[in-house]
Amino acid sequence: MGDLIRLFLKLGFIGFGGPAATIAMMDDEVVVRRRWFSREHFLDLVGATNLIPGPNSTEMAMHIGYEQRGFRGMIVAGTCFILPAALMTGTLGWLYVKYGALPEVEPFLRGIKPAVIAIILGALWRLGKTAVKSVSLVPVGLAVAGALLLGVNEVIALIGGGLLGLMGLYWWRQRLVCAGLLVLGPGLLQVGSVDYALWKLGLFFLKVGAVLYGSGYVLIAFLDGDLVQNYGWLTEQQLLDAVAIGQFTPGPVLTTATFIGVMLGGWTGGLVATVAIFLPSFVFVSILNPLIPRLRKSPLTAAFLDAINVSAVALMLIVTIRLGISVLTGWQPTLILILAVVAVVRYRLNAGWIVGGGAALGLVLG
Image (tube, rainbow, N blue to C red; front, side, top):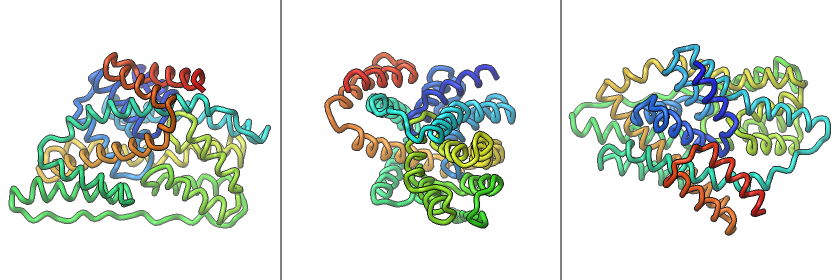
C-alpha cells in the first residue's frame, strides 16, 4: 500500500499533459520499472477505461490500485492521484477569489508541453508494439485514427473499432453470428433552480462525473451550458479562468471542479464538487475491474478487447499529433522535444525528471 501511495502522489504532482501523457507515465512506472503488469494486461485496463464515463487517467490509477491491493487499493490509488491536483486547484481558487487574478505560469508550460509529448511518444511505441498482435489489427487502428481525424466522437470511434475487431478477428474466422453491442447512455439529471446551493452544486458535478465521455473539451461544454448559460453561477471569464487552472495544474483536468467549488462555496464547496465529480469513477471501476479477466478468457470478448486496445493507441496518437501541432510553434519547444525524446529513448529517465527539466528549459529559453 505504501508503494501505491508514493507512486500516485508523485504522478499526481507531475501528471501534466492530459490523460495520454499520464497513462504514458503509468506505463513507464508499473510496466517498465516495477513490472507489476504485463503490457497486454495494462492495455486491457486502458481499453476498459475508454468504455466507461469519467477521466481515463484517474480510472487507470484506480484499476492499478484494485489490481495490487483490492478495493482498498483502488480507493488509496485514486485518492492519492486526485489529491495533489485538487489541493493545488483549490488553493488557486481561494487566491483567485481573494485577489481576482491567476499566477503567471506560461514560461513553465512552454517547456513542460514538449517534454510531455516526448513521454507520450515513448509510451506509444511500447504500447503499439504490444497492441498490434497481428496484421489484421492494423486496418482497425487506421480506421479509428481516420474517424477521429474526421471529427467522429471518441467513444463512438473506439466502440466502432471494437466491433470491427469482433467481425474481423472472430466472426470471419469462426463463422458465428455476433450479437451487436447495445450502449445505454444514462439520462441527465436536472439540477433545479438557478439559485446556488451546496447540494445543487454536488448534484451537478455528480451528474457530470456519471455521464462525461471524451476529452476535456466535453467538460467545458457541460460547464458552459449549465453553470454559465442555464444557472448563471459563473461568468464566461470565470469559466475560462477555471478551465485554465485545470489545464496548467498537473493531474486530472476534472479538478477544475475543485476550483469552481471553492469559488462558489469556499473549501466546503471545493470538497463537495471534487467528491461528486470523481465518485462515479470509483463505482464504475469497482464493478468493471473484476470482469476484465473473464472478458479476456472468452474468444469473442478477447477479440473485442484486442481491437479496443489498438483503437485506444490510435486515439493517443491523434491526441499527440494535435498537441504537437499546437505546441511546436518555434525553435525553443522543438529543441526541448528533441532533448526530451533523447532522454526518454536513450537514457530512459523517469517522467518526473523529464517534466522538471522541460519546465526549467522553458523558463531559461523564454
